Each structure stands twice: as structure tokens, then as C-alpha cells.
Amino acid sequence: MLTSKQRSYLIGLAADITPTLQIGKAGAGPEATASLEEGFNTRELIKVSILKTSPDEPAVAADKLAERTHAQVIKVIGRKAVLYRPFKENPVIVLPK
Image 1 (cartoon, rainbow, N blue to C red):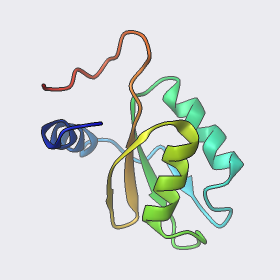
Image 2 (image 1 turned 135 degrees about the horizontal axis):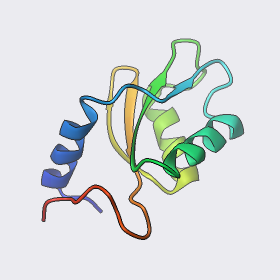
Image 3 (image 1 turned 30 degrees about the vertical axis):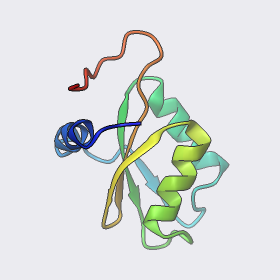
């Protein structure tokens, strides 16, 4: 579980990131989950854009993706969500205590 200080730090890092995944009319299905898993192989922090055509609300889609990929939803703002999953070995992002 992340503290509010750690969450704030991650939100600051995510401000400069462009969305790497778009959720469209297929919703947060297996294809989106597989794409996100692939993204987590190279990054710890991923921003997702949920399009208006998505059948799921942004918060619901983010929760589904986080649950399926064992990640944490850092924040959902509008139609953008930030997800975090640290690398098991040698995490790149060092969180404040």
C-alpha cells in the first residue's frame, strides 16, 4: 500500500508521461490487459487514456486493468489513468519513505 507522499511523488512523475495505451470500444478486455502487461515489462509507471467510445467509465476500466495486472491505480483524472507496478527485482523508481 502506498502512502499519500508516495502517491504524490508518482503523480508528479506521471505528469510528463504521454499515454502509452488507449482503451477504446473493446473496453478493458483481454487485449488491453495483454498490452498493459507488455508495457509493465519495460516501465513501472504507465498512463492510460480511456476513450469516450469505451463501454466502461474511466475509474472502472482502471480498476479492472489494475486488478488483472496486479498493479495499483495511482490516480484517475478525466479520461486518463495512471497505473504503477514496481519491478520485482531492481525497481527503477525509488519511492520516498
